[in-house]
Length: 217
Image 1: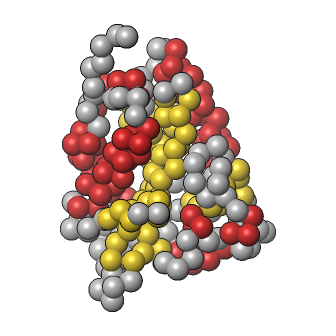
Image 2: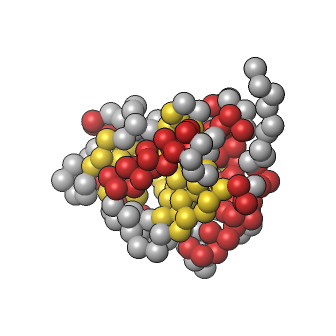
C-alpha cells in the first residue's frame, strides 16, 4: 500500500554507482526495521550495465558509455535519459518469499502500467522483459527488469522506455537477444510524458503488490 512505502522521485539524472550505494543502504535499513520500503523513480545518464549472466561479446562498443557490473540478474542493458528506471526496495517477507512470483509481479506491474496507455505488453518464453507486437508483426522490447534480493529485501527493479535515444542500444545486444528490436512509448506514436508514466505506475502498483500477512513460523 502507498502509505506503507516511501515513493522517491529524482528530478535530475542520478549517477549509477551513487544509486547502488543508496539502494544498499536502504535495503540494510529495511532489513533492520529502521526504514520503510521504498520505490525510487529516476533516470540515469547514458550507461550500460552488465548483469550476472552478461557475455562480454554482447558489449559491441565498450568505449561508448560507462559500463557497470552489477549484482542484478540478467545480461547487458542500457539506461539513459527518457527511460524511467524504477528501483524497488520491498520486504518480500510481507509479500511471500517466492522469487518467481515476485519477478512475475514486476512483469504484471509493467503490463498493467502500459495498459493505461492502450499498449498491450506481453511476456515471451525465454526472453526477459516485456514486449510489444508492432503492426508489421515485429516484436520489440519496451521494458526490462533485473532484480537482486538480500535477506528477502529486493532492490534494482524495472526500466520502461518513454522516449530514450533508441540508437544508444546499438552498443550492446540487449539482454543477449539480437533478433528483436527495442521500442518506446513515443516510438509507438504515443505522446506520453515521464509524469504520465509515473502516475500510471503509482495507480497500478496496488493492483499487483498486495501486502501478504504471513504467520510467524
